[in-house]
Length: 281
Image (cartoon, rainbow, N blue to C red; front, side, top):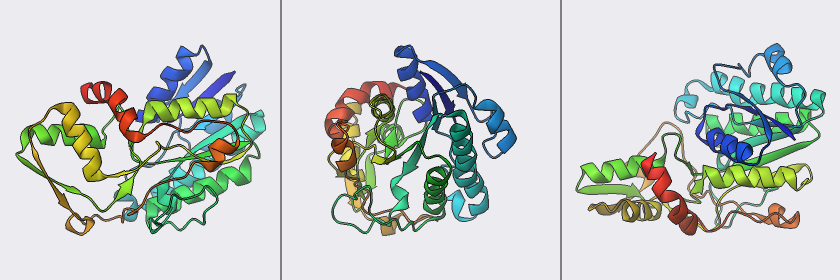
């Protein structure tokens, strides 16, 4: 099986490429400097003779998207449409990475894969548009939503908190946003398992099981880093950002179970496995 990975310079793509190479898969990797996903001719020329197209390319500057939504839309929606159209032309399966930000964060139970979307930020709107474009352009698609990603190959929450914990005596951390910290290696392996299982086209949730707050995650990070710092709970209102963050970002995994693909394990156990690699990165 031959894979094409767009956005190959990113944190998730690094781990996906490692997983694919370890499995002996054929891979064509295109980083941002190699391929402009907003250029339809370039995308069509790049996506040839492959079996799977994975879109890891994205505008991920959530706050900047509030004032630059057209730019974010070109990458997250138009770029996704170009890749999906090229995948369909090549007879390849399309895998689109999406986000919890397509929901409004107002739920109290895990979001089902078919729950109504209601993005409240520019980033969320552009990613929701990308989902729509992939479904419209590629009949053979997997939309994989994820959240709270961390990994060894990019800036991420645990590495930032470990650094701050080493510099400060006290850290205030938000305790009223709840989600599922998810290791990019685990997500990469899940996406490969989904493709290899020949899962039906549709939407799946690629997050760790369980849930915690940012404060709860920070406690785990500080313990792994063996940092001596006092943690204090605070609220989202104390850290106002240009883009609203979902208060509740817990995604359900019924669709995975329905097709016989095991969800990622509990976030805490997976952090124990990932911590040394992530914090050393």
